[in-house]
Each structure stands twice: as C-alpha cells, then as structure tokens.
Amino acid sequence: MSIPITGNTAVYLILGDPVAQVRAPEVFNLVFHHCGIDAVLVPARVPPQQLGNFIRTAFQAGNVQGMFLAIPHKAPAMEVLDESSVLAQAAGAVNGIRRDAQGRLVGGMFDGQGFVSALRYFGTEPRGRRALVLGAGGGASAIAASLAAEGAASVSLFDPVPGKAREVAARVAAHFPDCETRAVEANDPAGFDLVVNATPLGLRAEDGMPCDVARIDAGASVIDILMKNQPTPFVRAARARGLAAQPGFEMLIQQTPHYLDFFGHAEAANAVRADAGFIRELISS
Image (cartoon, rainbow, N blue to C red; front, side, top):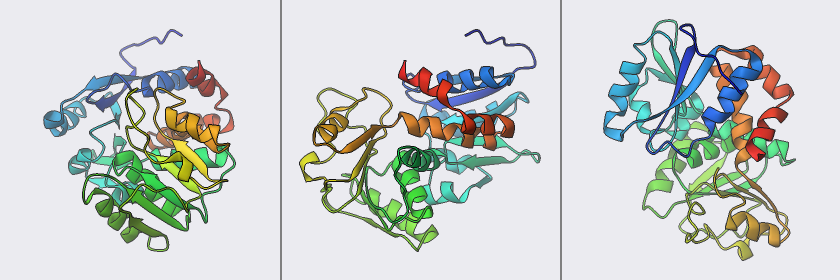
C-alpha cells in the first residue's frame, strides 16, 4: 500500500512512550487510503514530562488535525484539554484529541466504546452483566465507564496498586450511579459472567496470570485486551476450559468508526461500520 503525502495532507499523531507497540498507524493509514481521505497517522514518542508542551505546540500547526493517545499519556493529557466527553470524564482519561472551530482542545475516550461494540460483535450483550475488570489504568477505566453506561448490572475493579481501583470505581459510580461499581480487594473471578484482562500481564513470557482461570464461572465471557502476543496464556487457558475467550483486536477495530466520527469523517465512519473486513484482514495477517 502506497500512501501519497503532499502539502495538503492532514496529519494525525499518536503519542506514546514507548510507542513502538501501537497498531493504530497500520489501521488508520489503511482506513484513510481505503476511504480516499488525504491524511496520515504518524507515531511520536513523547516523554511524559514533555506531554503538555508537545500537545499545545503541535496543535499550532494548521494541518495537525488530531492526536491519538497511547500509554502512559491517556490520563495526564486530560490536564491540557478545554473540554472532554462524559465517558472521558468518567474514565479520567482520553485517547483522542481534536481542535474545535474555536481552537479549543477537545478530548474523547473510545477504548470502552470499542470494547462494548466488540462484545456485541462476539454475541455478548453488556446489559445486565456482572463484570470483573482486572486493572485500573486508562483502558480499564474506559471499559468500566462504558460497561456502566451500557447497563451492566455491576462492574468490579481490581488493581494491586493500593487505592487505584477505588479511585476509578468512585469516578465511574459518580457518573453512572445506576450501575453498582466498586473496587475489590482480590482478583478472584468467581461469580462474574464477564472477566476482562486490562493489565499488562501477558506481554512477557514470564508474566503470571491476571487471575485464576480455574475459578472463572462456566459460561462466563473472557476478553484479554492486549494487542500483542495473542492468544495470550490467559486466553489459551480460558479456551482450554471451554470458555468463550477473545483477544483485544476486535476492540481496536470497533473503535475505528468512533475515532473517525470524532475527527469529522462521518462518511468513512459509516463505511467502516458497514464493512470492517479489510481491517480484520490486516490485523490477522
């Protein structure tokens, strides 16, 4: 695939530190090409201490149309924004920033929406689910917020860092009080019908399991949102038990139209919603 870049090409950046692991440039440059959008998504490794200055400075360029955020920038980027979506406020993090007509920086969070859409793609309706989210970082927070927004019966968060899950649970509960959202003191998956690994466990061969797979209820759905080393040991172990366990690739695919809408590409967003097969082909290759 050859992407012509001219003086008129719109530029999007994805900021991370590290940034080598991100797959968004592969996906969105394919989407831009497929949909005839004169744009390019470029990775930028930005140290945390330079994040605010970089965002403000980069948006001074008129052809920089938006930014994507990867680890560890999703939460700190909130401090730079003039406005953010309700889901972003509940998650305490963003993964997209655009400049509006008044020059204000507006943030959105699409990890959770992509996750919920992926659940539905796999035939699992989030409404009424009792979910355990392992982790309390930006992705985990977004997933918890979107599950609560979509009518999950309960969302429980576990993180080994003291107080981290409690902080996320309190923020999500404040925005979506109809869902019972709480922090739990152990990573025991028993009693839940949706178990989500939103931790880094599984990226390295020596990593342990995020929870005891033998304790997961029969009939529960399992999602591991890691984008590398799939199927992870966690997914393989869950499948060995006969559980429906899926990697995080579909979550990335299902986020794509939400990003496109956010950045003003409604026609492309609708095209991807109608047929995302070309993205799945890329991800699975």
